[in-house]
Image (cartoon, rainbow, N blue to C red; front, side, top):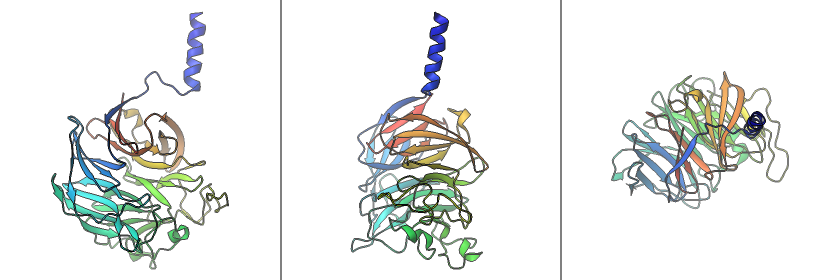
Length: 355
């Protein structure tokens, strides 16, 4: 009888993908107001953005929170506001929805020398042209080899992502001071591209990370009604929006275009229906060392954390770590010295995932 019961339990755990060693979730901070991004200053302190424009310094140990003054010209509009924050070598980089007057805004990026009282930001990038829309700002930031990469969403304008003379719908690559690299596509083999553009054809990429294993940059991108994807940032590439639909349709149900076709960059993994892929990291750490090299991708729609195993841009498998437990997950960061995973939710909390 005991043997039969044990076998039945094993079938139950396998059927529902439940592990006896399922990671533990702990709520560390709550009461935030529509947060969007977090970045570690050290093991205990993080900077957090709230869409309304607040930049917060939070101590994860004693739970103390303070507002840092700043001079950013933010317009909270639809999906826009104060978005990504990235701390790097005593400097703070932010992406935000800049008020360009008469209802128009842009995805803009600014930097400041860090102090915990007041930050004097200066713009290093503004997406041109400014657009009257509250949609699709992109806004993730990654630094690689002292270049900063920026995801610029297409602002709901569709085919603007195929116009390399405009920034929306592209991946941007510039120096940390805003100067333009002389090895960007414009100066090599894409003479008609704006000089800041590194790749085109994206819709609303809200996840991006530099892999510590292969030194490549990877992104997640929101499709329309279906067609979210995870893929690599590639020099001079074109992911095809809105010629391609990535397997999805318009919200009206009308067809967009093929999932993929030759001549366009191909993603590693597509989701139909959409999961609303929000943020991502390539995991490296001791806490879950069996995950090293895997992509951890967060979801707004089904409130999940997913693990993607891939090699040489080929998808291997996907595992849902958890789903529907903590709300809409907006951002994910790894605590470097422990490998523990910190998750930021739209509902205003920071959660820690550990064994």
